[in-house]
Length: 309
Image (tube, rainbow, N blue to C red; front, side):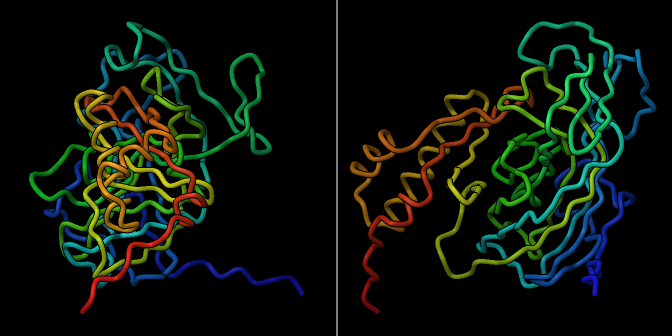
C-alpha cells in the first residue's frame, strides 16, 4: 500500500505579505512548537511585472524582498532562543537574475534579466549550462528589538543575511525579542554562492516546510546562529565585513566561555586555529559574515562544570 502523505494543517499564503521586520505586524498565523507548517514565499521581484530584456535600473528597492509573515510561535518570550528547522524548500517557476545598478560588488550599470527554468532538479543557465538546484532563503528573521527594519536589510534579528546555509537540513537560531518571536521569510534563491556577488542570485517563488522549537532558561543569543550536520556558524552583520566578522567571532568566543568553561584568552586562541571566517553577502547595505567551526569538534569539547545551586 502506498504511504499516505499528510499535508501540514497550517499553510501561510503569499498574500500574508509585508516589507519590514516589525512587531507592529499582526501575526498571520500562530503555530505550536514542534508543529510542521508550510510557508509560501514570493520572489524578490514579485511586485514587478518583469520579462526578458528588462533590466533592474528603475527598481523600487522599498518594494523588493517581500516577506511572508509574521508567524507567531506559541509560548515564545523575550530571552528565549527560537530554533527554525528548515525541512524542505521547493522552488516554483522561473528564477530571475540581473544586476541592480550600484548593488553588486562590481560597477555594472546595466545587465538585462535572464530567466532560468528548472528541469530535473537543475537550473538551465543561458547557453544550456545545467547547474544543480540548491535553494536557500535569502531572508529569514524575527521582529527586531527596536524600530522596524526594511526587508532588504540584515541585522541582529537575521533578515536579509543571504547565507547559503539557510537551506533544507539546517537549523537557524534567533534571539527572541517579542512575545511570539514573529518569524518572517522570503527572497528564495534557486542557488547562491558566498557573497551573492552581483547582488541578485536567481530569485524565485518557493514553498518552504518548517518546524520551530524553543530553547528556554539557557544562554540567550545576541545574533543568529546556524547548525548543520557538520558545522556551527555564528552570523554577524555590520557596515564592514571586518566589523561583521568581529561580531561573529565574539559570539563564538562567548559560547566557548559559557558552554565549555574556557577563559576568554584560551577561547580566542582556539577560535583562531579551529574556526573559519567566511563571507555571506557583500551587497545588502550592511555586510554579513559567518564564523564557522566543526560541530563534532565543538560538541566533543568538555562541558563547563555546572555551578552549585
